[in-house]
Structures are given as C-alpha cells and as structure tokens.
Length: 416
Picture 1 (cartoon, rainbow, N blue to C red):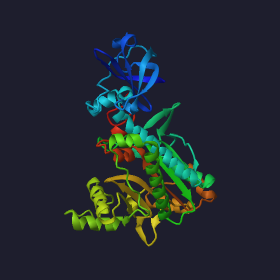
Picture 2 (picture 1 turned 120 degrees about the vertical axis):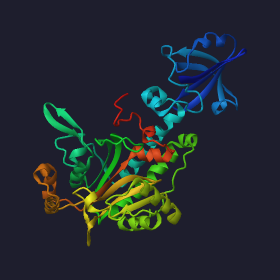
Picture 3 (picture 1 turned 90 degrees about the horizontal axis):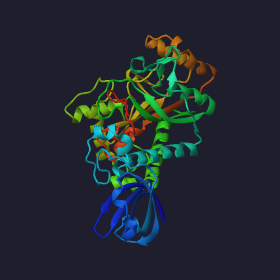
Picture 4 (picture 1 turned 180 degrees about the vertical axis):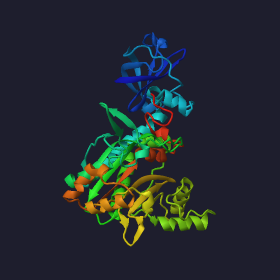
C-alpha cells in the first residue's frame, strides 16, 4: 500500500511512531516500530511524504486500515509550521488569520470542505442546464462602457484606453440567446460597491443563465427551481463527506417554490413586523429574513420567490408587469434569510429598449452595441444570476460569505 500526501499529524511514543497522512480523499494512518521509526521524529507536520508499507486492518485507525512496516520518503523540503495547528479537529484561528494564510489554512478539513461543496454545486448547475439544452458560454470580463450601472464599476487601463471590469455577463448572454437560444456561464463578476458587510464581495462567482421563447418570468423561475434541485443533489452525491463533516442540512427543494408579489410582501411586513415598508423600492435585509421565516412557517419551504419588484429598482432591460406598469416581471429568490438569485423577463423588442431608456432620461447611443442585436429579431427571453458564495455560505451556515470564498476581494482585501 502506498500513501502520498501531507503529514497531517505525527505522534512519537516510546514504543511506536504514528503518522497521519492527508490527501484529497481524507486521512490515513501509518504506524512504525523499531527500525521503521528511525528518522521519523525529525519530520514536521505538512511535509509532503510518500508512505509505502503493508495495509493492516485496525478499526481504530481512520478508514479502518493502517499502514504497518512503513518506508517513508520525503517528497518536499521540510515544511515550516502552519499559522495554526491543522491537525486539531476545530479551527482556532480567527477569520482574518485564515484569509491571510489561505493557501495553507484551507488545508484544514473544516476550511476545505465549503469549497468542495461549492465545486459540487457548480457541477450540479452545469449538469441541469446541459441536460436542458443550454450551451455554456464564456464572455469578456473587460468591457468598453460602464452602461449597466456606471457608479459601481472598476475602471482599468486597456492599452491607454478607458475600460471597465464587467459587473455581469448580462448584455452578452442576452445577445447569445439570439445565437444559441439557451445559454449559461459560470465566472467572476465585479462590483465596486463600498460595502463592508458579511454578505458582500467586490468580486464573486456568478452562475448565470438566459433562455429564449419564454412566456414570462415564471418560465425562468421554473428553471431556477430545477437548477437548485440539481445543485442540492450534486452536493449530496459529490460532497457527502464534507456535508457530514460540517453538519450540513441540505435543503429540500419543493416541486413548486412558493412565491409572493412584492406588493403583497410589503403588506405582510406592515401587518406583522411593526414596520411599514410600503413605498420602499426594495426589501431590507431584516425584511428578507422575516419573509424567509414566513415561508418556512406557512409553506414549509426554505426558498421563497418574491416577484414583481418595482421597475424603479430594476435595470432598464426588465420587462414591466402587464397591467401594472410600476411593477416588473422580475424576481428575487430568498434562501435562509438572504437574497440568493435575481432574475426576470427581459425586453426583447428594439423599440421597447429605446422607449425604456428615454423614459429614464438616458440616450440610446452608449448602448448602441448592445441594442444592435435587438434590431435583428430576438425572442421573448429571460434569465437569472445566482451567487455561488452566498449559496455555499447558506448551506454551511457560515456567518460571513468570505468563509465560502477562496481568496476574497472586498473593500479592504486585495491579497493573497
């Protein structure tokens, strides 16, 4: 039997030396006695080793098997001490220490696990959409104009010209509906919003999808439901050990996720919370938490769609609600008290875009490249975007979204 990995733990006793080796699959133990233990006391934890020996049953060893009579070969230089003990079952370091030393700190099984869950989630997202006939696309992250929301973009120097980091693939994925009909993308997006909270990042991973020939936003919501069910199933299948390690309670995705119109949600909040948010264009975080609790009580669901957000709060490309022009055919999905998904039906006629921009006092010229596709026939369409880090943080019960982010980028952090 041969093990290759990191020396997770070394214990030297009078009669034997125990080595616990860690690799991508978990932990395994080797025990050396007599001449096989020579030189082992000089090894340091996190040194990369190869351990070859005889596989011997031992119910007390990790996995029920240990390596006996081992020959140990050091595959790296002697490892320096990590910032905190990685072999301990709990993490003693505070979040800033973990983030400062992420390449080493994330080796701890508890800190590694959320990222394995995120990877499984992304695989589930792809699998559902692949099966539904979507095409995966990859769009530019550097764009020429800050037209989606000019105050919240990062400017960059593009060979002497002004350019910007993309806030989303929105314009590109809409254009690609005219090519592939159904598209999705997983990739980074950038928001230059000076938030310093436990739920915001300046760069995060967005899981985006856009589909053509929809009747309205409810067709998009149906796809969101299938995606969520597929992501949860993929986590259970591919990251079951990590879920068990963290005590993750995977959600049950109902066959139909309950929904409430924004106006009705405001009435509920006014009637039951002692506050009156009516007239506000958006939900406060406390209101998202209350509505999530309401969905659990009334519908037994940890998911809740809030539909019909005011047009004043939605981008210009959002389709208005027929008969209630102040509201939109859009939605947010709340999960365990937090907004997780935003989506809706888009405008698809060129003249509607020109009119929508004029109504907001904006000229069409800055959007000329974007609007060009709509001159050539675009089907009714809609889409959504899901924040991977928020999803993962909710699953694992992290108090801070940075705990579900490999290398967070925020108001104060640009390294490592």
